[in-house]
Length: 477
Image 1 (cartoon, helix red, strand yellow):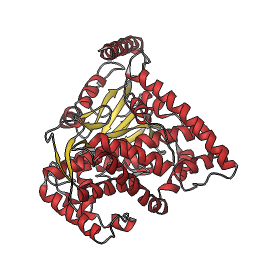
Image 2 (cartoon, helix red, strand yellow):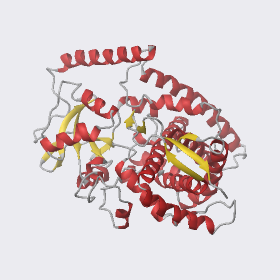
Image 3 (spheres, one colour):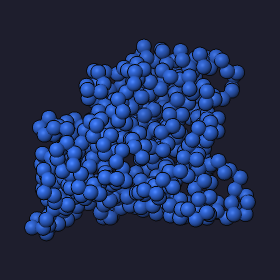
Image 4 (spheres, one colour):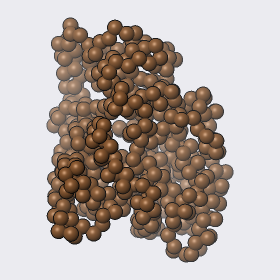
């Protein structure tokens, strides 16, 4: 109750501050005014704009249905609004996605809300531009290329089996979403980064995530205030680990150069990146890898439960793979390449339930697009739903049909991992996590959903409101 009261007070303070700022600014010129023709749309109140409507529809996981789609109907695929203090153009469609995502660093740059930047870190790759972005991406790609991923497969297999043996074999009811969050968190830290933290570290990271889209006001008890406190705790832990790792590596005792954390520290030793960049990028990688992957897995199982025929086809694919391996033998990269139908099911699940809604960019020059001018300094928001739910790109878009991925998909129409130079660097790792987890669950357990009609909500990323409880039992040998 105390937290709820503080949150309400925080929101009231935010709104009051915004209104005072609006009065102060109302006689001043807006950001980046241009003589060109702006897209149609409503800007709402000064500074606040349509932020309240945006947050309300986001909370209900209806951002597209309640906020974007009605404005598309009224104004067209490109329209203007004002969100979180910034004049914003929202664009929809594959061509718009291609134009803005492929022009990263040329016409637009990544632009996240203030709270997100402060909590993820100003030195993370999401804030880097141009050559610095390429440098960091190159270091990360070293561990996430084909050779690095092949090394990761047996490690992921071991982590998944150990987790299932410890947590699933002794229980009849499991929260699938929370279970996969804990597992993917472990995989990212231990398998990818080579780090080990005390129990409870996941909860600290979760407190940070709660504040990434909150109003950036450090009022005691607010989401943002709690998130900043948790972020300081994580920073202190990581600085200690980074310095210990550097000392070992400089003494020739690193021992795990294939691990991404070692690659980052090596870059620091060479002077390519700073200690702050190592810390901020570890934080970002943990968030980017485990929350979105957990949701993708949960939605895949939701779709399998609702479509028994698809589950049967998928199970046959995994039985065939399992029957060709010796008992207890780990999967290989070649095995994951045989999971073609499984990946179609996962891709279709992510089309209907994308792990990200879209992302913001900022115009670094006046942009002429579709007969409109987007002034320098304005934000641009592209959306996954703008194409994922569009009949133009996907026939019967609200129908679950994994086989649609047997045919080529138009470029920039399917973007669960983003696109362009900022395409998620860990998308292939996410794919491995999904495929390997599915394999061990469907071949070892009988399972069923306990809340088939469970709602999906967002805070700030989408998640099943009850954690997707399932009933499980071991299959007989």
